[in-house]
Length: 260
Ligand code: ZN
Ligand code: FE
Ligand code: FE
Ligand code: ZN
Image (cartoon, rainbow, N blue to C red; front, side, top):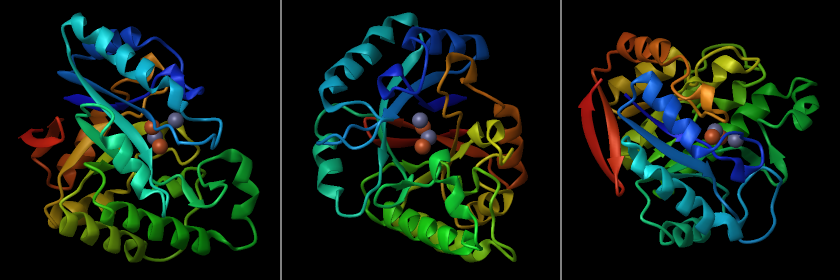
């Protein structure tokens, strides 16, 4: 197993030295750990990502733990923001990344949908509209072709809000885009620690992705060392229940399929 989505304190809302994350991965028996902190923006943007001036420090911090005896991967969790594609292309040139993760947190300017400060926007029967906005951005994120895999597919359910009816109307366009653009997705166990109390994404999404032949990997989105490999047993069970027998690893942006 690997865990390719762990953070560092450079994003200002994660704790623990990278060495502690690597030790945790070793205790869990993981084969590889990959750091993927929140990407910097060219200008000050919000208070929960690394600063552009810290990018060299981030790369050096990850380099420093390579001596610990576990395979270390270097990644970045990049916010997909329509119109900012050029910046991601610039970032892609700034290091020998093993992978770039595409995430949708912002569904409109200044509105990060997983931020509790915007929770009140879910009232007044707006859940369908918010889901529409979110999944439209998610499809664009996949179609951008900028990313090796996409993060926490149904993050929009974080606080437990979901529209009524068959939710495949949201999942199907995303799964089609993944298949068409040859992009993988993660099963992310952080949702189990959030009000939703569930893995991202839903079993139904995982099943559709499996049927479409979309590659998958399991990640924790750890923001503290003790969250590395968090609940991977249930994530693996969910993947197997959907029919997955393989997962993928990344090296210098090359995807490698391995047995799950
Ligand atoms: Zn974070
Ligand atoms: Fe995220
Ligand atoms: Fe993350
Ligand atoms: Zn995340």
